[in-house]
Amino acid sequence: MKFLLSALLFLYTMICMRTKIKIELDKPIVMVGLMGAGKTSVGRALARNLGIPFVDSDKEIEKAAGCSVVDIFAMYGEKEFRRVEEKVIERLIETPPLVKVISTGEGAFITDAVREMVLNKALSVWLRADLELLVKRTNFRQTRPQLLNTNSREILAQLIKERYDTYALANIMVETRDENIHKTLNKVLGAIEQYKQNKETKK
Image 1 (cartoon, rainbow, N blue to C red):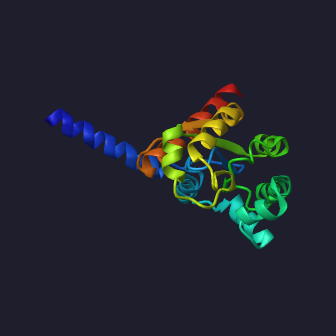
Image 2: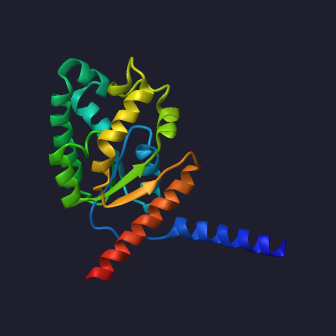
């Protein structure tokens, strides 16, 4: 019993320490992954933890266009949406303050030009989720054009097959599960620390 209490105290202390860690950054952090992976919620929590701004590229696209992502797809098609998306993400990456967290739509990192820009000018974090979690989190959403009026499980399974190899090109991969957001946040913070340590070691 005494050992268990000590172990729990140690775990609690480590979690508290994790939330207070200061990570020195010189570029934006860009969250990538499929819809439902947690890019926005985890990205916002990460920004709050690090004391830096958070922006959602889809929200910025909607501001620029004056309508929703769904409406842009319906009225102008995916090609035009990707063109606008590239310009918006470029602006977000290059506009001060440079150090921020940017959440991107699921197709952004798949676009060659966007991926090259992110890999060259930002720190990319892929939140990898399994099919069951993605289906659970997106079942009642009406904000993703690809999932409207269709079998979301089949579409998500196809997207996993088509896109996970490309997401794997991100600097950091974090497995996200059906868990407390603070647990996922701690994993992201730890992965960023480890990545930076590895970079320092290679210098």
